[in-house]
Image 1 (cartoon, each protein chain N blue to C red):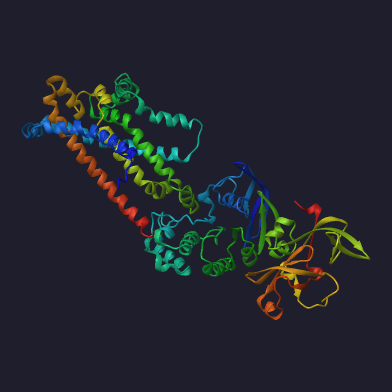
Image 2 (cartoon, rainbow over the protein chains, first blue to last red):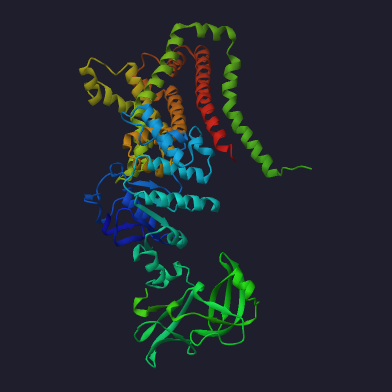
Length: 354
Length: 269
């Protein structure tokens, strides 16, 4: 279990403030944040590249706070990999085990094993200057894993590799994690968090603003910032009120959303995920609640199929799969219905807003 | 059509004048020295000994002082500490100091009454009029060249690489010798060559510390003041030639390595 207790660190004009997280052993923890949010700095504090001004870092029952970098045995793969340019691939991977009294055969065997596992055994004699981004990343990873670190820290590991390699790398990280390695992965891309994390922490302005399982964070974002990170683009400023025993949200004075569960009066935000909204191009109203007629203002290809903008008085962004689009064709300026179930409404009360 | 405007012609003229100014005195000295007197000087034992003394003492001085100067340069490149700009100023001081004044200051330090002189005489070594004293005087005026070049070299090594080394469990000294030093090598070698060349050409500080044994610049001055220009000139020509050969050789040695690295770095471009 890695425990950060009230970590604070001043870095120029920027502060990491009062960060407390507990990461159980074996967790795949994704730290999600924009550039400049302090995520890399937090990783460096854990690795020991810098020391916190206040607070403590514990790994199990060991206090790491003032331990030197070289004594922590925490593996860090830098965003730009920091592969040593004056050494071959073999020398890079062997770096951590080639000092001391280790026999040459022992070193060779270990380097060969780890490099075979990562599919870079054929590169061992090569100079690092001629390697691709993906190859460099594997060298950096092999160099870190060869000393069996207690914790693996990955700084934006997908940032500079080809899209075609990303799935391979994700599989590799998942496998390492399944084998018991605790991983802390820093990224700005929520899709990496969704596909890899067993726990997610969202960092913003040097603070952890939400933490939990991916489902908790992405289904119940605590504020607009986290919601935006989870890919939600439909935000509506609303007034919550009770009408005939049911909780409703009133938007712009004319749209009325039906909410699931209990609420309380006040103002806030209503969020609807783009993929929870259905489109119907027929004339008849398809359902009785959370159903609005509007005009298609834009149709853009997206990774899901199409992203459709619909103006109902407020603009909704709707993800439509390519199949649905074929079966249910419409074009710009078409009048269509959009609808979504009560359960798709995510409520953020004002008092929770940042 | 004339591609060059008047401004470019003026620049060309001014540059040529500067080049001529640098080359002309040397060239005239070479022309005025007849082969007969040149070879006689080259055969002169005293001249040969002084040139050899100059080369080896400067080399030894550079080598010896680099043991401390290179790690010092790393500290200057990596660490922040109170008074750092003052320290940097002190390092550059020998460049602006009149070298005879530096010699006087050093003499007080290494003569038998001085701190270092006392320590040396305790082990039976008199630093004045001794190659060890010459080496100290050469180092005093030429150290900035090595320290500044090495500092720039270390500063150009990404600090992340050193941190990565530490993160892999290496000790700071192992990181220094396996990462920082090899990656800053080119600048350090350049600084080494510059310090060595500057040490070899030093006169002012050395003449105060050690008139004898005579290094080449002192010998040339001695011959000039005792016997005149004609007698001093062949020795000067010989020393300049030897210095040029040594300097070119060192440049080639370090340059070949640089070219190799440069080619590798650009192979993918």
